[in-house]
Image 1 (cartoon, rainbow, N blue to C red):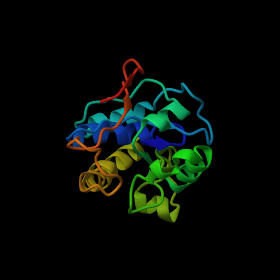
Image 2: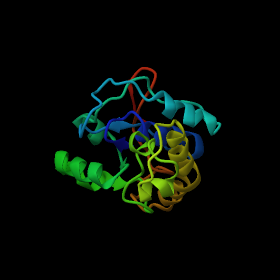
Image 3: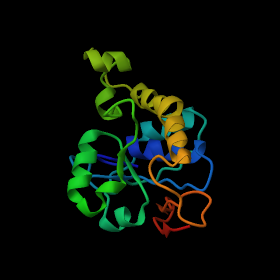
Image 4: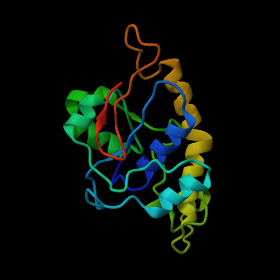
Length: 187
């Protein structure tokens, strides 16, 4: 999973996918240096709390990190949280452009809680009705991920939409970085 800063959307998406998608899949998250925060910024506490509020274990790492060539090379597929990150990623890693996909088919942009936190609802975000900064924004995005996006992602993964399983392997193998030690794990 890849977003701009690796402090909200991609850590939440990876944690929710780990909890909901069963099978021989592993999920990790990285950021793309499109704007602040900087590498090693803490993952937002509101993002961690939103994951826990849905009843999922917080499996995010403590600090954000940006994608490096070895991450892209080692992954089978990378889901980008919005079209801007998708474009930047394909331009930055042109050799691997076929590995990048949008995380959701429903929208070209998963709302960023750092932007959305100023709005009352998703509809308010779309209409521009401002609200004071609120941790509920993280909950709204996490709920969208759990109820809409992750089930569709699971369906697409299991149908082989993005890639075909390797010969002799029951389902696709995906590389991840262990969040506790940042050590690369390959199945």
